[in-house]
Amino acid sequence: MRKPPEDKLVAGTPPPTPTPSPSANQPPPPDTPQPPAEPTNQSAATGATLGTAQPTNQSAGGGATPHGTEPTYQSAGGSGRDAALDGIRGLAALGVWLLHVGGNTGVIYRDGMFAWMTTRLGIAVPIFFLLSGLLLFRPWAKAFVEGGRAPGTPRYLWRRLLRVFPAYWLVTALALWAWSSLDGYGWATWMLMLQNYTGQGQAPDGLYQMWTMPIELAFYLALPLIAWCLGVWARRGNRAVRLLGGIAVLPVISIATVVAAHVWDQPQLALWLPHHLIYFAAGMAMAVLSVWIKESRALDSLAPQLLVLAVLLYAMLSTELAGPRTLTLPSLSQSLWRMMLETAVAVLVVAPFALAPRTDSLRHRVLGNPVSAYLGRISYSVFLWHAPVITLYYKVTDAEPFNGNFWPVATFTLIGTLLISAGSYHLVEENALRLSGLRRRVPVPPPEPPAREPSGAAR
Image 1 (tube, one colour):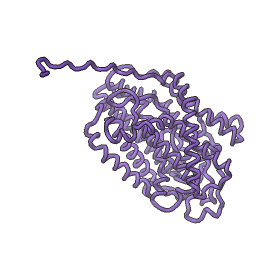
Image 2 (cartoon, rainbow, N blue to C red):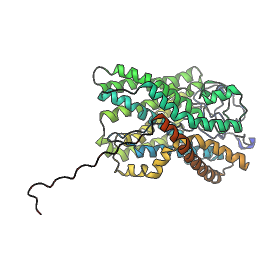
Image 3 (cartoon, rainbow, N blue to C red):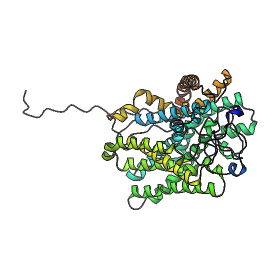
Image 4 (cartoon, rainbow, N blue to C red):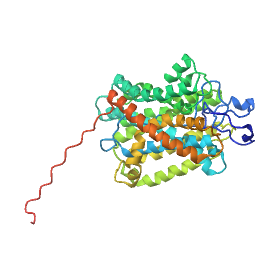
């Protein structure tokens, strides 16, 4: 991204950036245009939110994780894909696109609650991480709670790598070839998803959303070990309860990481897996509950209230309680508030669908309709392609960023992203799914025999 004119950066105005951080204690996006230098006592602080001066190592931009990367999954009470969870993923992917369009056009830096709430669309990150924890840990949870064989680690890792890397390599290679001058080391760093662990400064154009990929990959690699530890811990006593107790350790690690980042001035900790374990842990706990209780009638009856509560907590997340939008860095308490609120919103959004999967309910009919479900299936490609499409728009049109031209940018990039993502999904992702063995037909249960008429029934 090009830097905005300096006269646009007035005192008290948040610096333009295409992406907010996923949590209040996270560094700014790698491609954040740099505003005039801030006082040195702020630039080194942790807990940075939007527009915070970058740490010396690779920074992270807000956006969304590669979601769409989970395997075919089953609802708690039946078989086959849960279309409503696909719908959640699809809407979250649109939220990420809207967030970045708002950032590039400067709309999210205007006054008013709407601008604040648009800025907090980075909530998609916790939702996506939660879905990964839910869907990937569920086979282990089922094996531990109900008995049976746990997933084999080599096969699991093979399927994960084939699910993630092919489309990622395609998008990253094209963006690096078109808009970067990195040497071989830089290429290797990005192609191997090591960008969060090296001090490369700003991300290449079109790749500012990729900060989540190393975190997601780290969770994939760590999950078999985490699951093994939980399985050993849960062998005695009530296995489901002990699993939940073991999972409860993971959020403590995240909170400790936030505190350590502030106390020891280590903002790069926000780019590593321990910081985000709280979101994955929420999904893992939900996986255990989905196996243990199957379906919750109480949760089903309270689902509308829970979704309304999620909206109210999101509004609270959009206030300064969870940190500012400006260069003023959040305090430790603001960072913790934001993490807690993000976790609560993510849980409240997903739980009514994961733990009360009644497909005839209004919420399932709304989010599980064919359009939103299909958008969920291609959401990984939407995540990968939307930032390059936004970058391409500005380079081709030579339009000035941060000038509020929201609708032209939104129209072009939405259409372009959806078309390219659909092609990428069918040409790249589906072939990789077949190769990995993920794309398997779910057998249709045989029809039930017709009920016999009771003897003596009236004719």
